[in-house]
Length: 367
Image 1 (spheres, rainbow, N blue to C red):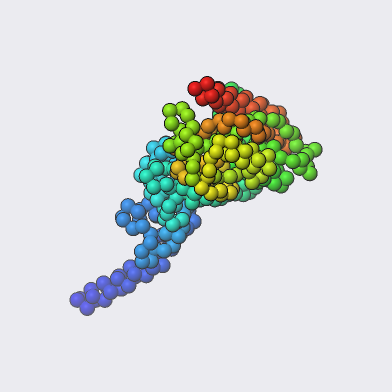
Image 2: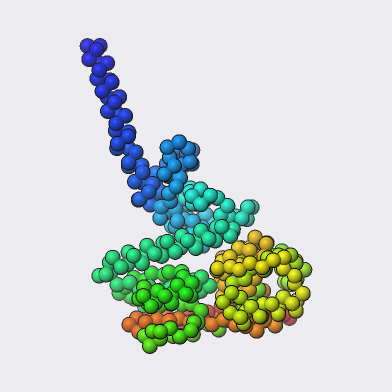
């Protein structure tokens, strides 16, 4: 009997080992690499495992859709509490997901001691994650041809305006017979997407005449002034302290695309006798905000960017800065007439926002 019992125990131990190797481990790998629900990584995180030791390299090298959404919700909401409320999850889940994104990209995504203020590295990650999620959304739409979807592209400066306009339409009239997808894209990306018919509406800076102009309707959304974006330390008692811009980095984004803006910013810097420490060319306005918010630089952006999340950065109307930018809504003919009302709503909200900006500018000048 003893020999039989011993043999049985050995068989059970062997079977258990095989189960752990061939059943449990593949399930863990699938949960980490494919599902995107973050459950496996959360459980490991609670057990004190960061996914960087021993046999868990695959866990450390992967992030799921929920991790991406948590990171972007934190950036958009400005706090873990707001992000958790947006995604309807626990605050601890947001914290674990964001930490996972940090680990995946090697850390340093937030400015030290600045809360949720993104570093330049963080802005690059944010842009990549938004592009990835937007790409997945477009692919999903293509695979569901029987489900009508209205795809709206927009530049970040008008994100809040677009969302408010859509909410206003939803409260005033019945829900339309289609879904709406909002995709944050640059102006060039939107125009290319329109040409491929990957977008129905593009809300972006005005551009040259595309080859398919006859197929588009164009509505001016805003003709807006330029704002100077400076660190909070350079804005003292309602006044700009030019001396505090000395030695900082001049972050340029508009200047890269327009000689007019390049000339206007150079003339302003010379006239105000500001001596930057260096110049750096940026790919997006978000990088300008990152430089100003971290206290390391300043730059020029369209005034509607003041509606975005810009912690520790101040938008100031620069005196004597003549160049302006125009934002337009481009749409394919087949999306009217519902889109016509949406374009009008966006234009009205943009006018209200710019009116408030100009009012604040007048108060600053009088002060």
